[in-house]
Amino acid sequence: MSKLIIEGDHKLTGSIEPQGAKNEALQVISATLLTSAPVSISNIPEILDVRNLILLLEKMGVKVTRHAKGDYTFQADDVNMDYIRSKEFVEKCAHFRGSVLVVGPLLARFGEAFFAKPGGDKIGRRKIDTHISGFEILGASIEYLPEFKAFRLESPDGGRLHGKYMLLDEASVTGTANLIMAASLAEGVTTIYNAACEPYVQQLCRMLQQMGSKIEGLGSNLLKIHGVSELGGANHRILPDMIEVGSFIGMAAMNRSSITIKNVSYDNLGIIPDSFRRMGIALERRGDDIFLPEQDCFEIETALDGSILNIADAPWPGLTPDLLSVMLVVATQCRGSVLIHQKMFESRLFFVDHLIDMGAQIMLCDPHRAVVIGLDHRLPLRANNMLSPDIRAGIAMLIAAMSAKGTSEIGNIGQIDRGYENIDERLRALGAQITRCND
Image (cartoon, rainbow, N blue to C red; front, top):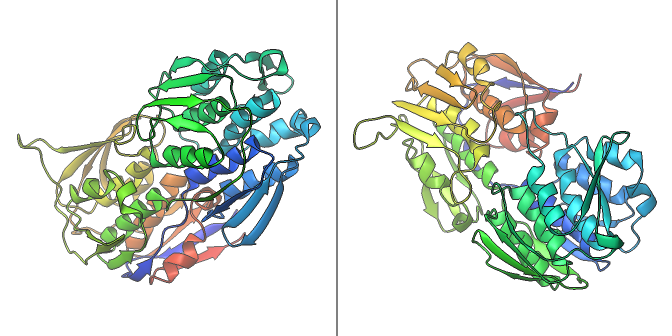
């Protein structure tokens, strides 16, 4: 198992550019299955989860051409349906979360698909009900096959799905994306209410519009998709990853360093910059860059009535849950206290035990809430040996280790690699002392 060895307490300096957005990449790459025409996508992050999806598409018979780093063309004109019906395919899908996004395209275009219970982060139960119930509303029949440990979905008489109205039980990002893709080739109009409206879902819709799809309501939670009989090709560029942007803000703050984050697509960051400002972090917008000046102290805001700050995740345009782990770590060295409320996943805060071992003052109230008492850099964190349980806890541990006194180790870093491309190399360029060891 690979690990990172981090010598902490080194200042960072210089500039860094975020990779392409992982969540958008998984959606738009899956959408290439909707057409037999070539689809070119640039700024693809070459991280583990994305590479696994590309390998899966190649196994399915999709022609994949890599022109340069992050620049690919996909053509699904000879998809191997025998492989897609095989147990091997279902087992591969079960090993990584991003595979759920091929279900909608396969069902819409070929009339059948398997929905395996997906793997991924160990952050608690992740429902698939939104996907399944949405496909049923569009007319798909659902059958559970115990020998495959998966659901088999089939469109009516093996033909096209039928557009309908649906009210989602939750604003699921992957659920919304899956249903948009399925509805794009359905007969008639599909209306999705309580749809997720993240920038990455908007980007998926824009690419589908290039391909010939008719979608109304971009940026809102009410989408109308006018189904078409076939889709064509497209050229698409993926947005920068907002989670990387937030992670780099946290790193600069914890190390009291001055860095510039380049080409962040600031207008698509939503509430993220202001959420860090509420923790006392002074960040400046400079064109499409973010400049972080060196600061010795970060003072957390309090409410007008004097109560402590409550930072909670919420569907877009609320704060993404993927940054709460980073914000929790940053809070350990701010001045003041904050309640971190992780509403969506019941196991994502359990990594705080490692931070407590490092000297952080954190009270874990329950699986969803933690109170952090900031130490204002009076007591720096101590080095520690840790294992990463998921992508976001892994990057939070890395940020903590970079600011700690002494040398830390983080194992199971495959979890970090799933979401952050060559993170050790990129941070060394800023002055971090990080070594990767392959056991």
